[in-house]
Length: 437
Image 1: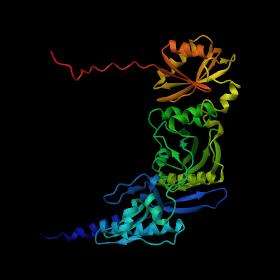
Image 2 (image 1 turned 180 degrees about the vertical axis):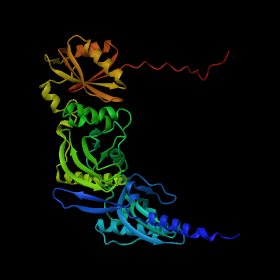
Image 3 (image 1 turned 30 degrees about the horizontal axis):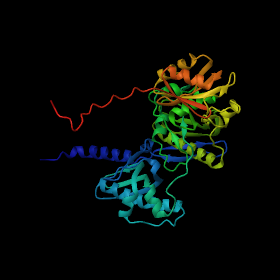
Image 4 (image 1 turned 90 degrees about the vertical axis):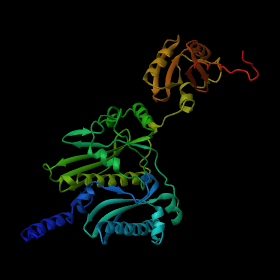
């Protein structure tokens, strides 16, 4: 079949254009700080949304169980594009192990490829350029923490902070958003890998009641009682509030991000800085770079002792010194103890749902001598605590509750009430020596 040579030049030009686009370099992230001169870091377009490439036949574990090494530059070639890429990943494993060894105080020794395959849990593609037989990339390598620690002779466990609830607040177009709508800032925090961080981040998914409980107005509420209730829902001890203000010069054009690292119920400022990218396509790279800076600021504050759990957020269990001061020197261990007028005691009760809270409060308020019954610690699906003001004998309170069908356990500084459960029916088992008929 004859070859149409008249189309060859146009085809060659099209191939050259495609290759030029693949090998094109990316945008830069410029830093602008009050105390530091502006500097730029080149980020290619594929770095806008880093992906995790797992090694064959292995599943990458959570980043919290891995040592992570980033910024590994590779430039390899092969007979095919796949062969060049696999060669680049092999080289990244070797370079990453040397970098990890030096970071942990070792001499930067090497391991065989088979040994590295056993401890590498994943490859993170930060930026890659793939040709027919050449592979140029900036990669990250994730090493299994326990296996790598045993080889390096270091501690495999990482001392981390108490659980910290993250409220990622994004200001864009003059409107603040946390979980009211899905934001780029929320997605950036969701893909942030925390394996090397000493901060134990609690990152809500943004579904269910998150948009109601965790909104832009919540960060300005200093009430410790309300914060304690919210933190109890997410199993956190304190709150971190990373904020970004996004300023777009024009659609698709440069974006400036002003970042703030705040913490605590008083919304205290820890540090602030600015980053800039040249196009809207690099927004994800801008946010990822900002999160790394914010995480480093939180880690430094934790090491310096500036990032501590607010004392007002520490929940005090019933029967501790705080409750003893409220009720003076009285003890609730005996049923015949009289409670002083206006004194309060803690009542623990099960709350599988909101209806259980209302039912328990109504039951307490209906008892003669009860002045008030207010739930101070709500844990839906668990055990909540109610503060009850009662005038009279503790035995009278116990008898009144039992008359309503409650099971009452009296302890030191508190009582525990539970709904009585119906007894199980007796099993209908026929005696072994019984005869039919």
